[in-house]
Length: 261
Image 1 (cartoon, helix red, strand yellow):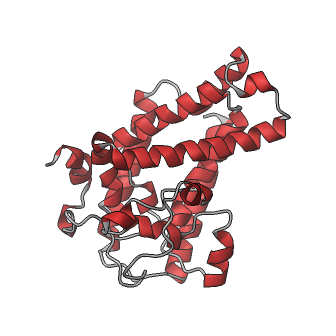
Image 2 (cartoon, helix red, strand yellow):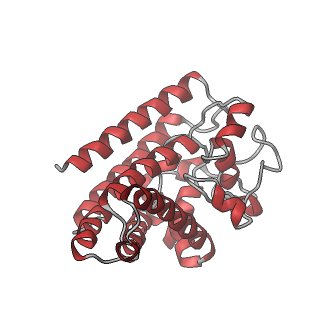
């Protein structure tokens, strides 16, 4: 096991346990669904996705990054910025790419069929941030690899970004309480749970907003930001209007959802 994998696993499990503890001590909202049932199925999908990535893809984004550096490919390898600036710029570019990818997965019908597995969760907590269809996870890695190849992103930037993306996804899907003043200050540099929860509303106009995972700037820049849900956080309905039956939320149902009419 490579050092980069060990580092990412350390941050992944550390962040997951921290958010779980925070949810237990200071929950933002009362959950409506049985937690054990949801967690078994959501985390089973996470495990399946991890196995599929390593079995089906011979290379990852980090492998492409090492190859790009060796070959001198990519825009950043032609303009020769200072290394620190190159790393920071690379992380920002990757974050914008994930934002644009997220928008595409909402507006291209074939991609939406995959992405609605994430939105069909009837509650909103740390496991929601990890719940994605297996094919979407593979496509997302492919898009990331393409960006790394074209931009010439250094390996350290890929590692930093993947750590931040995993941590941010768990944080901004966390059912955690933040003071309003803290939330407002964090929103200057980071997507908060209250901001992203709007994106999981059953109201379509709200579903198609607040796409950011790490940086909140892209939603404001591209006009996709909504400050709060129409019904308020306490009264909003989470999920998709067509899929509000809790007994269906099992692993097989999630995997087969894109094929259902």
